[in-house]
Image (cartoon, rainbow, N blue to C red; front, side, top):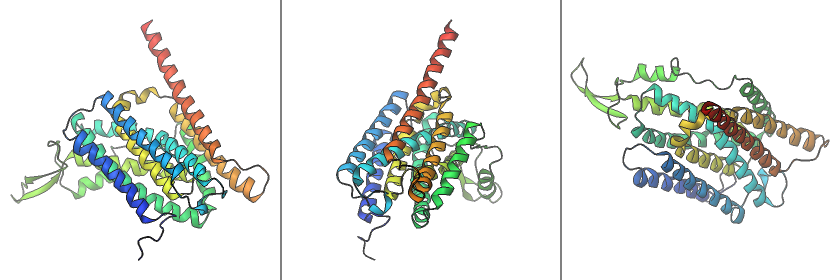
Length: 344
């Protein structure tokens, strides 16, 4: 098969080039910057996030200057690069905000398995590898469905509105480790040590029954499995949300990956402060409801019925920035007032 044949609107060379870029970034991360197992300080975490964010911005500049968008994924055929950049930035901000809930869950997982802070970055690193693979699978399936049957977006819209309502009323995604079926399955079908043995996911020990040396998984591996499971659970919300913003698979995937890289690199700074962002969940729920409503507005009321004007992509970007930024600002202000009252 000709390698230059397009996949999802772009040549495999472009997809391969992006994956090579991500591979290089991960190699620099684990192979050079964080080669030793050590506690990541908040300042180093912030610097790592700033580096990934800067690369994400540069990638947005590439989309605006050199990217060749496939018109089949865009509603209006003019100014495609501007549309691609706006959709990429919107997707990046939205996925970053949605992935914020992962911070709470990852912290819960690390505490449950008593993962030392020195080894947490190692788990997150391999968790990123899994997230890149699983998001690629989900997005490929989602792109095939959405771009073959556009009406599926209506189901995505209803799902986003329903999910936003559940989050707003306090019935969002629940992630319990005590009765997790995947964790129970792994423990039932694998030999697992009772304690963490250094930085290893697997070790060889003597089997008491046979006396032979066999392979055991450590709780560090179980923590990695749960981190991957959490990412799959949250992808159920985030993938429909990004497809409601853009149908371009390349924009969907790249915005997802950069958001995951940035947020997990900032975990060590956000984990301690995550609880202070008390209004972020409400902001996310509002954004999901509004994005779902925007899909119905554009595809049903505007495109099909012609009752209302079409909402351009920049409105979704503005809405995301205002609502999420407002939720973070309100959370920070509330936390400051609480500290001042405690001091008094």
